[in-house]
Image 1 (cartoon, rainbow, N blue to C red):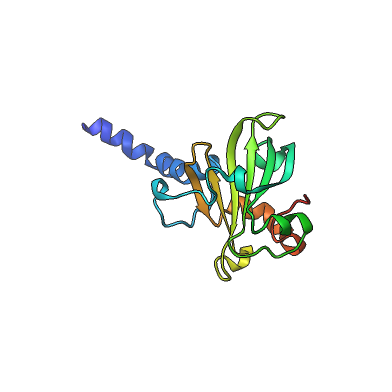
Image 2 (spheres, rainbow, N blue to C red):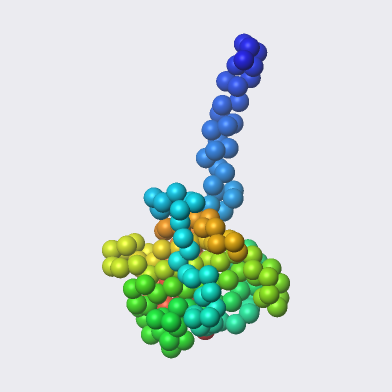
Amino acid sequence: MNALGSLRLVRKWPILVAASLLLPVMTGCSNDKSTDPPDERTAFFPEDFEQSYTMVRDCRGPSHDHADSYVTVWADPSSAQSYLEGDYPFPVGAVIVKVLHTDASCAVVRQYDVMKKGPAGTAPDRGDWLWQEVRPDRTVLSQGVQQVCVSCHVGCAAGRDYTCTDP
């Protein structure tokens, strides 16, 4: 690199640093507390979850809190009855899957937003819930104590164990 190229790079470094700090905010990325590399993470729910999980909320939307997507909500076998009857808190290991759809018939999946209840102490100021954002191809986009999720769900801590919505 010549002197002129080096000078241009030096002048641009504040912009490059600012862009690298803002990129996670601009892309919806959140406080990912996972120590696992992205390619080694696995979704909290099985690929065939619709066979064993219970749909606890039918197709609704659009949900402004979830990218204006239409949504369905599914609960794992250990927590479906708790969700439907309002029996809180959820048991450790409970998994709630909010499926984000692009269409009003809820036929095309955009993304999965997932909550998993950890043991006491996992995230004590967040109800011990961990969150994931998962692509339709099951690539985990983010995982952990998701600040973007928590910022909405913390308002539903009392009475609904951070789930926010009635069935």
